[in-house]
Image 1: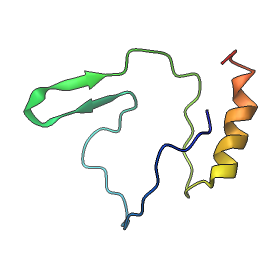
Image 2 (image 1 turned 60 degrees about the vertical axis):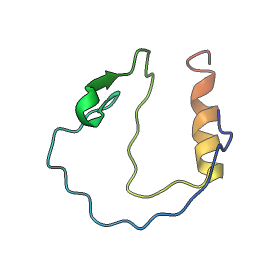
Image 3 (image 1 turned 30 degrees about the vertical axis):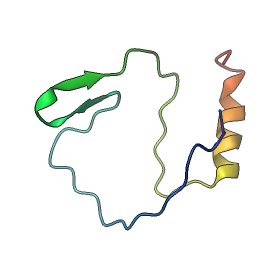
Image 4 (image 1 turned 180 degrees about the horizontal axis):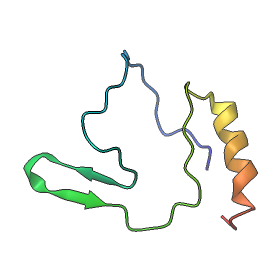
Amino acid sequence: NGVSVGTGTTNTTSLTLNNDFRIGTYASGTSGQYFFEGLMAVAKFYNTGLSAVEIKQNYNAYKNRFDI
């Protein structure tokens, strides 16, 4: 909904995928795999981080389209 819930910094390096890339699931050590139980109307990937303004613009562009 475009509302920030936290901030932070990180150091990044080139991403190397040694496993399958998945959306909506993650594995947690020996606890097993967890799956998102819902609908994803849109998934986008960017080659850079987005500003808060850009995130809000994206949210506003899609919310009416999907009756959010």
